[in-house]
Image (cartoon, rainbow, N blue to C red; front, top):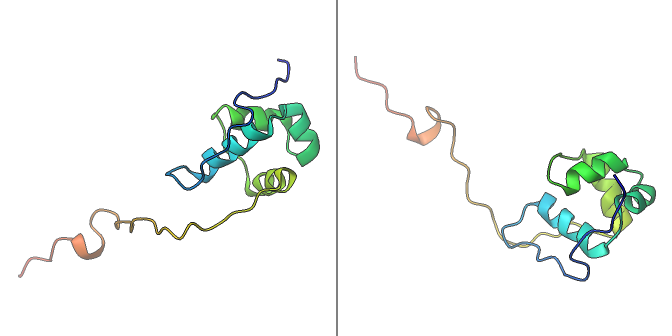
Length: 102
């Protein structure tokens, strides 16, 4: 399969609007309009891994994410929004049923 530049060249990503970090990274890769071959050469991340990630079929390791971030000149920025609190698993935490009196 030949490397081809991604679509959407010039479209700026919209971080922080409900997108995951992976989605934001895919947007940044699209904006840079590099082929998988070029991005692999610049970042040191395997081309097949990039292709799978770009197509949504694979996750990347943290070291690979670090390499891509450095190659694309990205940095992680806190938006100031706090995520909704996580609920404890069923049967644990304050929602657990009270023990029956003996």
